[in-house]
Length: 202
Image (tube, rainbow, N blue to C red):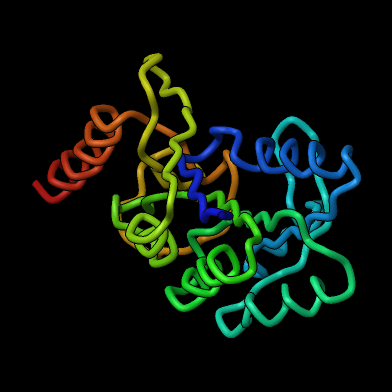
């Protein structure tokens, strides 16, 4: 029986690299895979799925209204899909996560989702929340904080490298906008912003 997997981590933990390696492993054995990623990331110069170490691949793009079950089954009817791989899975809707579960449960297609667990305010993304609730397997990929401990948090920073506490949940960016930190240093950086603001007011 196929399973629904959620590989989660903070920024810069190698999620996209792991996904692309998995796709390569299937394809090397002559098996067809289907790659998806969020349409929200349209930065120029990036492949649909790009890793920091230079690997990239084109992929189908999903929007909030995309019916993943129907789209995958149309492709599956033309060529048997051995595995479905989804990058930026935190941007899936709850309905789309259940569509992925249906592909695993009813069609016996393994679905491997890779994404962030929480945003820059330590709040769960909708897709991550749904995956944490129903995925058959939860696998944490490890990133490293500047102190050497495991990084679990995603700090959003401004152009000067200062922590950002407020804003929209989704803001596309790479290392220039986000820093992966352990919880201790994430909280310390946020407190620095509060202290600096208090000093200005005082």
